[in-house]
Length: 108
Image 1 (cartoon, rainbow, N blue to C red):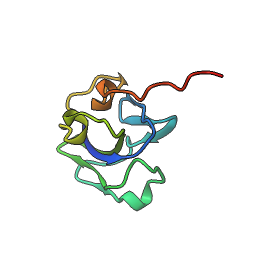
Image 2: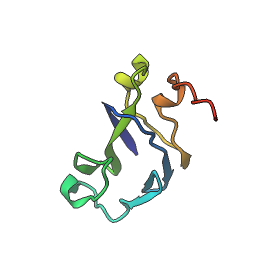
Image 3: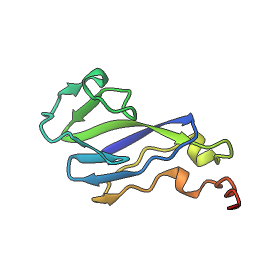
Image 4: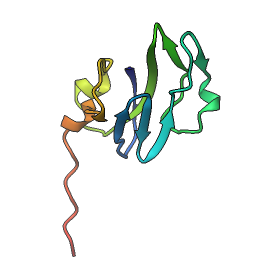
């Protein structure tokens, strides 16, 4: 699986998990297992706010573009992310994991 990241300035977080041909994005499970080699699934057919481009299976490999939110203080790795290749199953590390986080509001 190849994950392409499309960064966007947006307050919020994205958590991604991979399990075979399934991706879970903030708790929403997307199963791309039925997508045949050479086929394209239009973005309009996927009801997930984080998927805005078609999903393809090219030479047996899934290619998925995910919209990745980042904060105002995002680093270069989040503003201009590289593709994520050769993923193992489990939590997918995103470039935003190492961005500075806004300070927590003190409890009153």
